Length: 110
Length: 110
DNA sequence: ATTGTTCATCGCAAATGTACGATGAAACTA
DNA sequence: TAGTTTCATCGTACATTTGCGATGAACAAT
View 1 (cartoon, chains in turn yellow, brown, red, blue):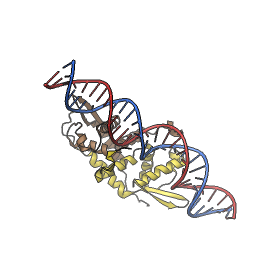
View 2 (cartoon, chains in turn orange, cyan, brown, blue):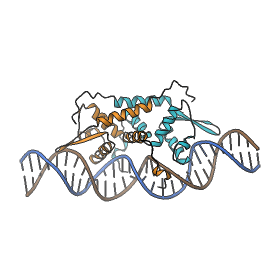
View 3 (cartoon, chains in turn brown, purple, red, cyan):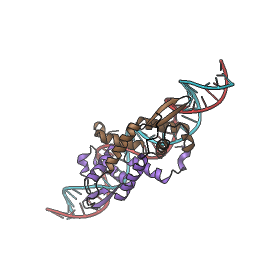
View 4 (cartoon, chains in turn purple, red, green, brown):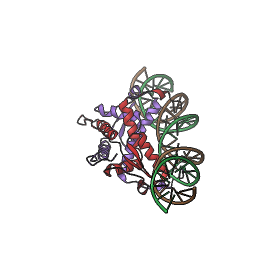
């Protein structure tokens, strides 16, 4: 890639919000997160029964959510328990709601 | 791609939320949206002064936001005014907040 | 020791995303 | 008519994402 933009640094908040949003940017991952946040508690590869995807693909999606900091995996042999990473989940919640909180009482010209 | 999953249909809400999230999944697009929602009103390619990107690249990001339904473009020769698509913006707001609204008073086992 | 279960990772293929410069379209101005 | 400004789109290059099957690691139970 030629990208002269390659070393530009976006602000922390912007970069983090984009990172969270990117992790949420696939329906399978939305389903996983909904499951985990409904499920009072943790979870495992019962996800395979909910998602139309191969085991290896689900594993990859889980990895991406983990890398984004939205979930935590905990080994519980022979299974793995996943759950929401509460701290970052709240952070994401705040970042998203501050993005959307804008005051639309101002006249919108379009 | 081989994807046996190719014709699977995720629920409308899930698919839409993922689509919005995907559009938010790049820092340049976050900046654009913040700009538009601060800016009481509409906006144009002054974005070029804010973003470390070429004009054509910014134009592409605007197109993606338009395709996701988050913004609207209005020709105002020789410029183009962009603004938040209020209806979908509120929809996105609701979808995100319902994703995050879960009750964490339940014991979290991790 | 062997087998079974659960999950991660590797290797591959195809699709998408990101970025740039160049070119083109639309509309105003001289 | 010719020139200017503003923006979209095209073509190109490379990176990343998505998906699968195959293989491997870790552990429990026979």
